[in-house]
Length: 186
Ligand SMILES: C[S@@+](CC[C@H](N)C(=O)[O-])C[C@H]1O[C@@H](n2cnc3c(N)ncnc32)[C@H](O)[C@@H]1O
Image (cartoon, rainbow, N blue to C red; front, side, top):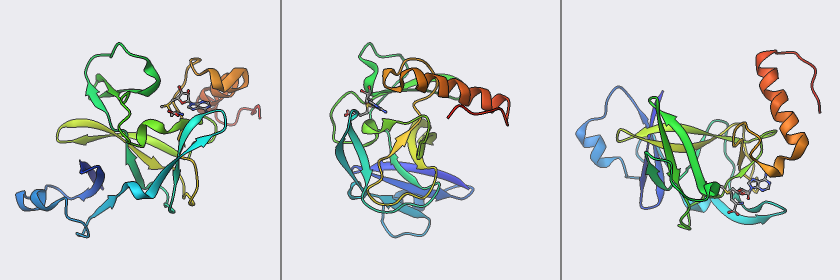
């Protein structure tokens, strides 16, 4: 199934898409309750201080597996911005590098998701919206309310909070992908 996401009035609207959308359905896509679309509103999440991690994003309601949660909002750039990379999301789309700069405190949630490379419960996906890329988070498993949303920021020894063991586990994860069945360091 193809999906499409649009962001209107601060709400992300997920559309399940058939072969093509008519002009009429394009015009009406923002209306709630229509067949084939869901509105994910900000009331489904809240922000809370997390021990040692700063702020994190928590669920207010339950979600199923592989559900669209929320987008990573910010400024889409084709050049690496010369700013602190705390709120920068880097990715490739159609073979080209892109960055989303979410440095501005804009009240959005995507920019506040913390890292967990061992037990993530959601993952970012690159979606296409009006021929431009957008990052959207999807759940990896069913989520109960009051769950902190965490995803794997990716490989690399650049995350000090992972510590030495974090780096080891990260390395192991890459090796396990190459050599399934190898012994695990827990
Ligand atoms: C995209 S921000 C996430 C939101 C951030 N916690 C906040 O309060 O604004 C990334 C920053 O959060 C912190 N962070 C994310 N995951 C963490 C973790 N697992 N442990 C400790 N700090 C973490 C780091 O300071 C990192 O640079």
